[in-house]
Length: 202
Image 1 (cartoon, rainbow, N blue to C red):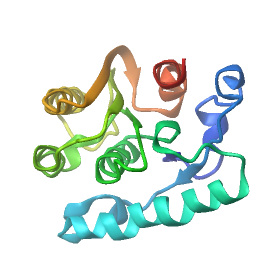
Image 2 (image 1 turned 180 degrees about the vertical axis):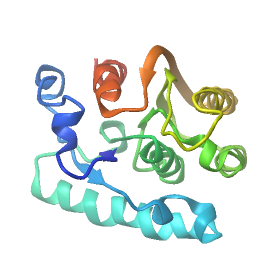
Image 3 (image 1 turned 135 degrees about the vertical axis):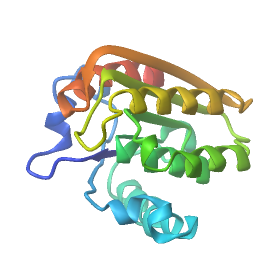
Image 4 (image 1 turned 90 degrees about the vertical axis):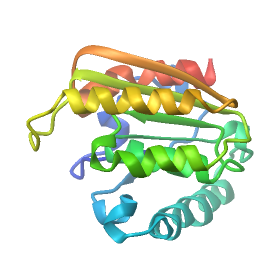
Protein backbone atom coordinates (compact mmCIF):
# COMPACT_ATOMS: atom_id res chain seq x y z
CA UNK A 1 0.00 0.00 0.00
CA UNK A 2 1.34 3.40 -0.97
CA UNK A 3 0.51 6.99 -0.07
CA UNK A 4 0.99 9.56 -2.85
CA UNK A 5 0.70 13.35 -2.69
CA UNK A 6 -0.31 13.97 -6.31
CA UNK A 7 -3.96 13.98 -7.37
CA UNK A 8 -3.92 14.31 -11.17
CA UNK A 9 -2.19 11.05 -12.06
CA UNK A 10 -1.52 7.66 -10.54
CA UNK A 11 1.16 6.69 -8.07
CA UNK A 12 1.83 3.62 -10.22
CA UNK A 13 3.14 5.89 -12.97
CA UNK A 14 4.74 8.50 -10.72
CA UNK A 15 6.75 6.03 -8.72
CA UNK A 16 7.61 3.97 -11.77
CA UNK A 17 5.96 0.78 -10.60
CA UNK A 18 5.01 -0.06 -14.16
CA UNK A 19 8.63 0.13 -15.28
CA UNK A 20 9.69 -1.98 -12.30
CA UNK A 21 7.28 -4.78 -13.22
CA UNK A 22 10.05 -7.37 -13.21
CA UNK A 23 10.48 -6.68 -9.50
CA UNK A 24 6.81 -6.45 -8.58
CA UNK A 25 5.06 -8.80 -10.99
CA UNK A 26 3.93 -11.05 -8.15
CA UNK A 27 2.77 -8.23 -5.88
CA UNK A 28 -0.56 -6.43 -5.55
CA UNK A 29 -0.16 -2.67 -5.06
CA UNK A 30 -2.83 -0.34 -3.72
CA UNK A 31 -2.27 3.42 -3.72
CA UNK A 32 -3.98 6.03 -1.55
CA UNK A 33 -4.16 9.63 -2.76
CA UNK A 34 -4.33 11.49 0.53
CA UNK A 35 -4.27 15.30 0.56
CA UNK A 36 -5.95 15.06 3.96
CA UNK A 37 -3.44 16.61 6.34
CA UNK A 38 -5.88 16.93 9.24
CA UNK A 39 -6.55 13.21 8.99
CA UNK A 40 -2.90 12.30 8.81
CA UNK A 41 -1.34 14.31 11.60
CA UNK A 42 -2.39 13.42 15.14
CA UNK A 43 -1.57 16.73 16.79
CA UNK A 44 -3.93 18.66 14.51
CA UNK A 45 -6.84 16.78 16.03
CA UNK A 46 -5.30 16.78 19.49
CA UNK A 47 -5.11 13.04 20.04
CA UNK A 48 -3.60 9.90 18.59
CA UNK A 49 -7.12 8.45 18.59
CA UNK A 50 -7.81 10.55 15.50
CA UNK A 51 -5.22 8.79 13.42
CA UNK A 52 -6.15 5.39 14.84
CA UNK A 53 -9.82 5.75 13.94
CA UNK A 54 -9.60 7.72 10.71
CA UNK A 55 -6.69 6.05 8.95
CA UNK A 56 -5.69 2.74 10.50
CA UNK A 57 -9.26 1.47 10.57
CA UNK A 58 -9.76 2.35 6.90
CA UNK A 59 -6.47 0.82 5.75
CA UNK A 60 -6.75 -2.40 7.71
CA UNK A 61 -10.48 -3.00 8.08
CA UNK A 62 -11.73 -1.66 4.76
CA UNK A 63 -9.02 -1.44 2.12
CA UNK A 64 -6.96 -4.51 3.02
CA UNK A 65 -10.05 -6.65 3.58
CA UNK A 66 -11.37 -5.64 0.16
CA UNK A 67 -8.07 -6.43 -1.56
CA UNK A 68 -7.69 -9.78 0.18
CA UNK A 69 -11.28 -10.69 -0.72
CA UNK A 70 -11.06 -9.71 -4.39
CA UNK A 71 -7.48 -10.48 -5.40
CA UNK A 72 -5.18 -13.47 -5.09
CA UNK A 73 -3.09 -12.23 -2.18
CA UNK A 74 -0.97 -13.67 0.58
CA UNK A 75 -2.71 -11.82 3.44
CA UNK A 76 -0.37 -12.70 6.31
CA UNK A 77 1.87 -10.03 7.84
CA UNK A 78 5.05 -11.46 6.32
CA UNK A 79 3.68 -10.60 2.88
CA UNK A 80 2.11 -7.25 3.75
CA UNK A 81 3.94 -3.91 3.54
CA UNK A 82 2.96 -0.25 3.69
CA UNK A 83 4.92 2.70 2.30
CA UNK A 84 4.61 6.41 1.74
CA UNK A 85 6.43 9.65 1.08
CA UNK A 86 6.48 12.88 3.07
CA UNK A 87 3.22 12.94 5.07
CA UNK A 88 2.44 9.49 3.70
CA UNK A 89 5.69 8.25 5.23
CA UNK A 90 4.57 9.61 8.59
CA UNK A 91 1.23 7.80 8.53
CA UNK A 92 2.77 4.61 7.10
CA UNK A 93 5.19 4.32 10.01
CA UNK A 94 2.41 4.98 12.51
CA UNK A 95 0.28 2.27 10.92
CA UNK A 96 3.12 -0.26 10.82
CA UNK A 97 3.85 0.20 14.52
CA UNK A 98 0.21 0.32 15.58
CA UNK A 99 -0.70 -2.81 13.63
CA UNK A 100 2.30 -5.07 13.94
CA UNK A 101 -0.07 -7.98 13.44
CA UNK A 102 -0.77 -6.73 9.90
CA UNK A 103 2.46 -5.17 8.57
CA UNK A 104 5.99 -6.59 8.62
CA UNK A 105 7.59 -4.00 6.32
CA UNK A 106 7.34 -0.23 5.96
CA UNK A 107 8.82 2.17 3.43
CA UNK A 108 9.49 5.66 4.81
CA UNK A 109 10.48 8.03 1.99
CA UNK A 110 11.46 11.60 2.89
CA UNK A 111 9.44 11.64 6.13
CA UNK A 112 7.96 15.02 7.08
CA UNK A 113 9.02 14.56 10.68
CA UNK A 114 9.39 18.33 11.07
CA UNK A 115 5.60 18.65 11.07
CA UNK A 116 5.49 17.19 14.58
CA UNK A 117 8.66 15.31 15.41
CA UNK A 118 7.97 14.98 19.14
CA UNK A 119 4.71 13.10 18.53
CA UNK A 120 6.40 10.51 16.34
CA UNK A 121 9.53 10.10 18.46
CA UNK A 122 7.49 9.79 21.67
CA UNK A 123 5.18 7.33 19.94
CA UNK A 124 8.11 5.09 18.97
CA UNK A 125 9.57 5.30 22.48
CA UNK A 126 6.26 4.44 24.13
CA UNK A 127 5.33 1.54 21.85
CA UNK A 128 7.47 -1.57 21.89
CA UNK A 129 7.92 -3.21 18.52
CA UNK A 130 7.52 -6.84 19.51
CA UNK A 131 7.26 -8.29 15.99
CA UNK A 132 10.07 -8.21 13.44
CA UNK A 133 9.75 -5.04 11.36
CA UNK A 134 11.83 -4.16 8.31
CA UNK A 135 12.12 -0.41 7.70
CA UNK A 136 13.36 1.27 4.54
CA UNK A 137 14.11 4.91 5.44
CA UNK A 138 15.57 7.59 3.20
CA UNK A 139 15.90 11.32 2.62
CA UNK A 140 17.50 13.56 0.00
CA UNK A 141 19.99 16.31 0.67
CA UNK A 142 17.89 18.90 -1.21
CA UNK A 143 14.45 18.25 0.29
CA UNK A 144 12.25 21.34 0.43
CA UNK A 145 8.63 22.29 -0.01
CA UNK A 146 9.29 26.01 0.27
CA UNK A 147 7.55 26.63 3.59
CA UNK A 148 10.49 26.96 5.97
CA UNK A 149 13.87 28.62 5.92
CA UNK A 150 15.54 25.60 7.51
CA UNK A 151 14.78 23.27 4.58
CA UNK A 152 16.49 21.00 3.61
CA UNK A 153 18.35 20.62 6.90
CA UNK A 154 15.18 19.93 8.87
CA UNK A 155 14.31 16.99 6.62
CA UNK A 156 17.75 15.47 7.06
CA UNK A 157 17.88 15.95 10.83
CA UNK A 158 14.37 14.54 11.17
CA UNK A 159 15.24 11.40 9.24
CA UNK A 160 18.41 10.93 11.27
CA UNK A 161 16.52 11.31 14.57
CA UNK A 162 13.98 8.81 13.33
CA UNK A 163 16.74 6.38 12.39
CA UNK A 164 18.33 6.64 15.85
CA UNK A 165 14.98 6.11 17.57
CA UNK A 166 14.07 3.06 15.50
CA UNK A 167 17.48 1.46 16.00
CA UNK A 168 16.82 1.40 19.74
CA UNK A 169 14.01 -1.08 19.08
CA UNK A 170 15.45 -4.59 19.21
CA UNK A 171 13.13 -6.12 16.60
CA UNK A 172 13.65 -3.48 13.91
CA UNK A 173 15.87 -3.98 10.88
CA UNK A 174 16.47 -0.58 9.30
CA UNK A 175 18.05 0.35 5.98
CA UNK A 176 18.80 4.09 5.94
CA UNK A 177 19.89 6.06 2.87
CA UNK A 178 20.93 9.70 2.48
CA UNK A 179 20.62 10.55 -1.21
CA UNK A 180 22.89 13.34 -2.42
CA UNK A 181 21.13 15.98 -4.50
CA UNK A 182 17.66 14.42 -4.31
CA UNK A 183 14.67 16.75 -3.93
CA UNK A 184 11.25 16.37 -2.32
CA UNK A 185 9.57 15.06 -5.46
CA UNK A 186 7.79 12.09 -6.97
CA UNK A 187 10.60 11.66 -9.50
CA UNK A 188 13.16 11.30 -6.71
CA UNK A 189 11.03 8.73 -4.90
CA UNK A 190 10.49 6.80 -8.14
CA UNK A 191 14.26 6.59 -8.60
CA UNK A 192 14.72 5.26 -5.07
CA UNK A 193 11.73 2.93 -5.02
CA UNK A 194 13.68 -0.12 -6.35
CA UNK A 195 15.95 0.06 -3.29
CA UNK A 196 12.95 -0.61 -1.07
CA UNK A 197 11.73 -3.41 -3.34
CA UNK A 198 15.11 -5.14 -3.21
CA UNK A 199 15.17 -4.89 0.58
CA UNK A 200 11.65 -6.24 0.99
CA UNK A 201 11.36 -8.87 -1.72
CA UNK A 202 14.75 -9.91 -3.12
